[in-house]
Image 1 (tube, rainbow, N blue to C red):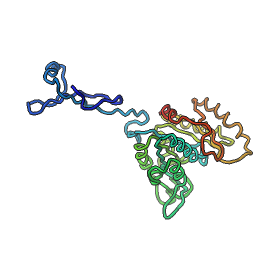
Image 2: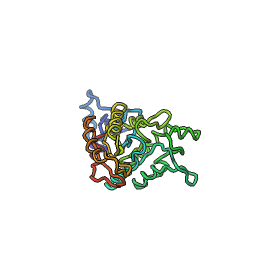
Image 3: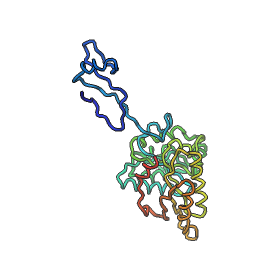
Image 4: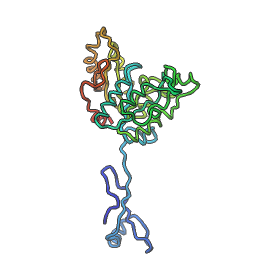
Length: 303
C-alpha cells in the first residue's frame, strides 16, 4: 500500500478512501468496519488515496472577516497622534527587515494631503515606505486611495466630491498579504482618527488582528499620549497584541527637558499597562535602530 500524496505535519487526514479498480463492478467507497477484513484481502497491493485538507492555523482572523485568506504576517503601525513620525519609523523597520532577507510588503490604505505631479496624486509617505522596502510592486497598490486636502481622509475625499471606499481599505491588502512574508500597514493618524465615513483606524486594526506597533513622539506629554493609545487599543481591539512602542524624536528641540527622561519613565509606565515593551528610542534624524531588534521573534510571539 502506498500513499499518492505525502502528508505534512500541517495537514490532517479527513478520510482514507481505497481506490478500487474500475470495470469489475466495484466503485470507490470508504472503508467500513464490517468489511475491513474483506477489503484487506481484496485490496492487497492496491493504491490508497489519502484525502487531505490543509489546515491554515489563523487565530488572528475569524471566518468571514477581512483576513480569512491571510497567508503572511501583518504589522499595523499607528501613532499617538499625527506628525509623530510613523512613516519614518515604518521605513526604518522596512529597511531592517529587508536587510535580513525578508520580503516586505507595504500598504497605506488611504492618504490625504497628497501633491499633484503630472496629473497624478502622489502620497509622499507611501513613496518613502515603498522605497525603504525595495520598491515592491507599484505605488498604486501601496496606496490605492489618495486625496489632496491635508485633513482627515473622509473629509479630504468629501472636498473632492468623493468618498473613501471602505471595502477597498480592506481588499487592497490582499495582494500584499498573499505575496509577501511581512506586510507593514501604516494607518492615517492615531487609532481613533477616521479612515472613512464608517471606519476609524482602530476598526481596520481590529479586523487585521495582527500586532500593533505604536509610534510616540519624544516630547513633553508623551507618557499621557502613549498610555491613552495603549488603553484604547486594549479596550477597543483586545484581540490585537501590542508588539511594542517606538519613541521617536521628531524635532531637534534641545530645550525640551523631558527628552532626557522620557525613555526611562515611559519604559517603566509601559510595564504597568499590560507589560508593553519599549522597543526602541529613535533620535532626531536617525535612519537605523541603535540596537538590533529581533523582529522575527517579535512577530511570532505576537501572532
